[in-house]
Amino acid sequence: MTVIKPERRLIEIRAVSNEENKMLVEGYAITYNAPATHQYGRRKFTETIRRGALDKTDMKDVPMRYNHNDNIMIMARTRNKSLKLIKDDTGLKIQANLLDTQSNRDLYKAIQEGLIDKMSFAFSVADGGDSWIFGEEETIREVHNIDRLYDVSAVDTPFYDSTSIYARSLELLDGEEKRLEGLRKAEELEIMKLKIKMKGKV
Image (cartoon, rainbow, N blue to C red; front, side, top):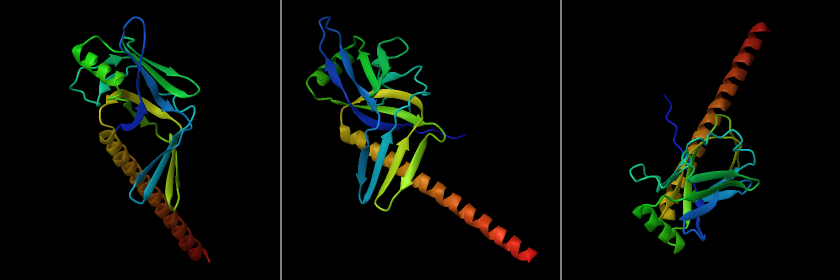
């Protein structure tokens, strides 16, 4: 059984002022056609999520978490409509009305004061839902079809999540390079077999 490892990306989050004193936060979880480049040592990895990548995405039950932690109470959720996911021409916008708990009040205050200004979202790509271009100095990945959105999550330390982004990006890069190398070897083997077969007929 294949275990799917959700990918994570950083996004911006901000508190929204309102007259009802609700704890509202919003931001864009995904922006289309906005290349994001990650440098790791001498390797450069650029990823772009193309418009239409969310057309078939499973977003039926998406929670909002803190640091992607399953052991901390969920802050908001699409299932009870405290979290809204809005697809528009820019990408995917999130609007959350945080539940009135002490932990959420503390978190909302931290967002208001700018102590927390980043979010991360976890997702997986459908089979064949991305394309790769391997250059000498840069590898480019374009995502055309996101299979599932697992969560959106407020994060307190951007470095923590950027580390996981780099690690996951390199893992994907290495895996794709190995897959393409395997295809090249299989193609070369078929060509060799064909040449041997043709020689036998001469």
